[in-house]
Length: 200
Image (cartoon, rainbow, N blue to C red; front, top):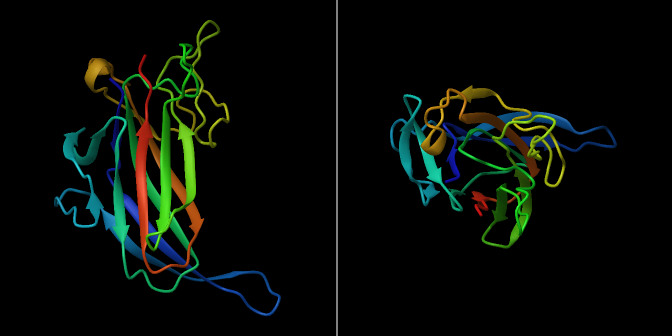
Protein backbone atom coordinates (compact mmCIF):
# COMPACT_ATOMS: atom_id res chain seq x y z
CA UNK A 1 0.00 0.00 0.00
CA UNK A 2 1.33 3.44 -0.92
CA UNK A 3 1.18 5.90 1.94
CA UNK A 4 2.21 9.46 2.40
CA UNK A 5 2.53 11.49 5.54
CA UNK A 6 2.01 15.11 5.00
CA UNK A 7 4.14 17.41 6.84
CA UNK A 8 5.49 17.66 10.26
CA UNK A 9 5.36 21.40 9.72
CA UNK A 10 3.50 23.63 7.32
CA UNK A 11 4.69 27.17 6.93
CA UNK A 12 2.90 29.85 5.00
CA UNK A 13 4.73 33.11 4.63
CA UNK A 14 3.05 36.06 3.02
CA UNK A 15 5.56 38.06 1.01
CA UNK A 16 4.83 41.72 0.35
CA UNK A 17 6.56 43.50 -2.53
CA UNK A 18 6.78 47.12 -3.60
CA UNK A 19 6.53 48.09 -7.26
CA UNK A 20 8.18 51.47 -7.72
CA UNK A 21 8.88 53.78 -10.68
CA UNK A 22 10.62 51.44 -13.09
CA UNK A 23 12.95 49.93 -10.49
CA UNK A 24 13.08 46.20 -9.88
CA UNK A 25 10.71 44.67 -7.36
CA UNK A 26 11.89 45.12 -3.80
CA UNK A 27 10.94 42.81 -0.98
CA UNK A 28 9.46 44.98 1.75
CA UNK A 29 8.61 42.42 4.41
CA UNK A 30 8.07 38.76 5.17
CA UNK A 31 5.25 37.77 7.51
CA UNK A 32 4.67 34.35 9.01
CA UNK A 33 0.93 33.82 8.63
CA UNK A 34 0.47 30.13 9.50
CA UNK A 35 2.70 27.65 11.32
CA UNK A 36 1.76 24.24 12.73
CA UNK A 37 3.94 21.40 14.01
CA UNK A 38 0.83 19.31 14.96
CA UNK A 39 2.20 18.43 18.40
CA UNK A 40 -0.63 20.36 20.10
CA UNK A 41 -3.32 18.74 17.92
CA UNK A 42 -4.51 22.13 16.60
CA UNK A 43 -6.33 21.35 13.35
CA UNK A 44 -8.73 24.32 13.20
CA UNK A 45 -7.72 25.50 9.71
CA UNK A 46 -7.38 22.00 8.23
CA UNK A 47 -10.10 19.90 6.57
CA UNK A 48 -9.76 16.09 6.39
CA UNK A 49 -6.95 16.05 8.95
CA UNK A 50 -5.57 12.84 10.42
CA UNK A 51 -2.80 12.73 13.02
CA UNK A 52 -0.45 9.90 13.84
CA UNK A 53 2.95 9.33 15.38
CA UNK A 54 5.90 8.62 13.11
CA UNK A 55 9.57 8.65 14.08
CA UNK A 56 8.66 9.84 17.61
CA UNK A 57 6.78 12.94 16.48
CA UNK A 58 3.21 13.87 15.55
CA UNK A 59 2.59 14.14 11.82
CA UNK A 60 -0.38 14.80 9.58
CA UNK A 61 -1.23 11.59 7.73
CA UNK A 62 -1.55 8.72 6.53
CA UNK A 63 -3.00 9.58 3.16
CA UNK A 64 -3.42 7.20 0.23
CA UNK A 65 -5.23 8.59 -2.83
CA UNK A 66 -6.41 11.32 -0.53
CA UNK A 67 -5.22 14.48 1.19
CA UNK A 68 -6.22 17.53 3.17
CA UNK A 69 -6.96 21.23 2.73
CA UNK A 70 -5.61 24.25 4.58
CA UNK A 71 -8.13 27.14 4.81
CA UNK A 72 -6.66 30.60 5.33
CA UNK A 73 -8.74 33.74 5.82
CA UNK A 74 -8.01 37.42 6.52
CA UNK A 75 -4.52 37.09 5.09
CA UNK A 76 -4.09 40.83 4.56
CA UNK A 77 -2.33 42.71 1.73
CA UNK A 78 0.36 40.68 -0.03
CA UNK A 79 1.62 39.71 -3.49
CA UNK A 80 3.12 36.25 -2.96
CA UNK A 81 2.81 33.27 -0.68
CA UNK A 82 5.66 30.97 0.28
CA UNK A 83 4.79 27.44 1.37
CA UNK A 84 7.33 25.20 3.10
CA UNK A 85 6.82 21.80 4.73
CA UNK A 86 8.32 18.36 5.22
CA UNK A 87 6.72 15.55 3.19
CA UNK A 88 7.25 11.91 4.19
CA UNK A 89 6.98 9.38 1.34
CA UNK A 90 6.42 5.84 2.61
CA UNK A 91 6.32 2.49 0.90
CA UNK A 92 6.46 1.64 -2.80
CA UNK A 93 6.00 4.89 -4.69
CA UNK A 94 6.83 4.17 -8.34
CA UNK A 95 7.54 7.66 -9.68
CA UNK A 96 6.62 8.63 -13.23
CA UNK A 97 5.90 5.15 -14.57
CA UNK A 98 5.23 1.75 -13.05
CA UNK A 99 5.82 -0.46 -16.13
CA UNK A 100 2.31 -1.93 -15.86
CA UNK A 101 -0.71 -1.48 -18.10
CA UNK A 102 -1.99 1.20 -17.68
CA UNK A 103 1.31 2.93 -17.01
CA UNK A 104 0.41 5.64 -14.49
CA UNK A 105 2.46 7.85 -12.22
CA UNK A 106 2.43 8.05 -8.43
CA UNK A 107 1.68 11.77 -8.33
CA UNK A 108 1.55 14.41 -5.62
CA UNK A 109 -0.19 17.80 -5.91
CA UNK A 110 -0.48 21.25 -4.38
CA UNK A 111 -3.58 23.09 -5.58
CA UNK A 112 -4.42 26.72 -4.75
CA UNK A 113 -7.96 28.09 -4.79
CA UNK A 114 -8.44 31.79 -4.06
CA UNK A 115 -11.59 33.30 -2.56
CA UNK A 116 -13.75 30.25 -3.34
CA UNK A 117 -12.97 30.21 -7.07
CA UNK A 118 -11.48 27.55 -9.31
CA UNK A 119 -7.91 26.29 -8.88
CA UNK A 120 -5.51 28.91 -10.21
CA UNK A 121 -2.26 27.07 -9.68
CA UNK A 122 -1.60 23.36 -9.53
CA UNK A 123 1.84 21.92 -8.82
CA UNK A 124 2.20 18.27 -9.82
CA UNK A 125 5.23 16.10 -9.23
CA UNK A 126 5.95 12.42 -8.61
CA UNK A 127 8.10 10.49 -6.15
CA UNK A 128 9.90 7.15 -6.35
CA UNK A 129 11.00 5.10 -3.35
CA UNK A 130 12.48 2.38 -5.55
CA UNK A 131 16.03 1.20 -6.07
CA UNK A 132 17.85 2.32 -9.18
CA UNK A 133 20.37 0.20 -11.06
CA UNK A 134 21.19 -0.58 -14.70
CA UNK A 135 18.42 -3.20 -14.92
CA UNK A 136 15.65 -1.36 -13.04
CA UNK A 137 15.02 2.30 -12.24
CA UNK A 138 11.63 3.92 -11.65
CA UNK A 139 12.39 7.63 -12.06
CA UNK A 140 10.56 10.49 -10.33
CA UNK A 141 9.84 14.09 -11.29
CA UNK A 142 10.75 15.82 -8.01
CA UNK A 143 12.42 18.29 -7.61
CA UNK A 144 10.92 19.16 -11.00
CA UNK A 145 7.32 19.08 -12.15
CA UNK A 146 5.72 16.07 -13.83
CA UNK A 147 6.83 14.61 -16.30
CA UNK A 148 10.45 15.71 -15.65
CA UNK A 149 12.70 12.69 -14.99
CA UNK A 150 15.11 12.49 -12.06
CA UNK A 151 16.63 9.61 -10.13
CA UNK A 152 14.63 8.08 -7.25
CA UNK A 153 14.89 10.12 -4.04
CA UNK A 154 16.50 13.06 -5.87
CA UNK A 155 16.27 16.20 -3.74
CA UNK A 156 15.41 14.29 -0.57
CA UNK A 157 16.29 15.71 2.84
CA UNK A 158 16.57 12.52 4.88
CA UNK A 159 16.04 8.75 4.80
CA UNK A 160 14.03 7.35 7.71
CA UNK A 161 12.72 3.96 8.88
CA UNK A 162 9.95 2.45 6.77
CA UNK A 163 6.25 2.00 7.42
CA UNK A 164 3.76 -0.67 6.25
CA UNK A 165 5.38 -3.03 3.73
CA UNK A 166 8.81 -1.38 4.20
CA UNK A 167 8.57 -1.32 8.01
CA UNK A 168 11.67 -3.50 8.38
CA UNK A 169 13.76 -1.22 6.13
CA UNK A 170 15.99 1.41 7.77
CA UNK A 171 15.47 3.64 4.70
CA UNK A 172 11.87 2.81 3.73
CA UNK A 173 10.68 6.41 4.18
CA UNK A 174 12.04 9.39 2.28
CA UNK A 175 11.59 12.91 3.64
CA UNK A 176 11.50 15.92 1.33
CA UNK A 177 11.47 19.59 2.32
CA UNK A 178 9.05 21.15 -0.15
CA UNK A 179 9.29 24.91 -0.82
CA UNK A 180 7.02 26.69 -3.30
CA UNK A 181 6.29 30.37 -4.05
CA UNK A 182 3.08 31.53 -5.75
CA UNK A 183 1.70 34.89 -6.80
CA UNK A 184 -1.43 35.61 -4.78
CA UNK A 185 -3.25 38.76 -3.67
CA UNK A 186 -6.63 37.61 -2.30
CA UNK A 187 -7.74 37.79 1.32
CA UNK A 188 -8.61 34.08 1.49
CA UNK A 189 -6.84 30.99 0.20
CA UNK A 190 -7.58 27.27 0.16
CA UNK A 191 -4.51 25.07 -0.36
CA UNK A 192 -5.13 21.41 -1.18
CA UNK A 193 -2.37 18.81 -0.66
CA UNK A 194 -3.09 15.36 -2.08
CA UNK A 195 -1.75 12.31 -3.88
CA UNK A 196 -2.99 10.12 -6.73
CA UNK A 197 -1.36 6.73 -6.46
CA UNK A 198 -1.71 3.78 -8.78
CA UNK A 199 -1.22 0.29 -7.41
CA UNK A 200 -1.78 -2.45 -10.03
